[in-house]
View 1 (cartoon, rainbow, N blue to C red):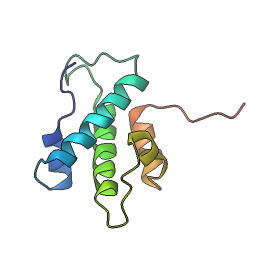
View 2: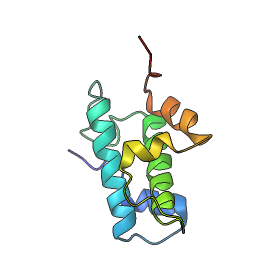
View 3: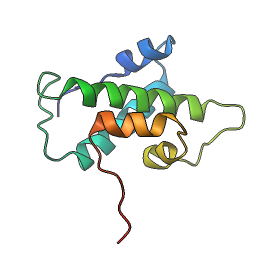
View 4: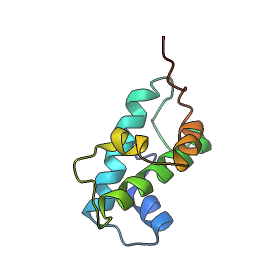
Length: 104
């Protein structure tokens, strides 16, 4: 798979240097989005819609921030952290094109 989202892009959004935490957050979000959005072709950044890329960058930045918070959320994975995203959750899910959960 191509690097349609990079740690450098996430670091730019956070205004930090690329380090292992930025790289790990980016990789976790990339894997989650590729798994959930199997309708997309992730061969290059040109094949991934801009809104999905923006949502993934925001989610990776949020994941990085949660893992570096003094209270810490070290046990969270990418999808668990999204549930705890608060007001940004709806915006990120809309950008990613994820459907709302439905209770049957």
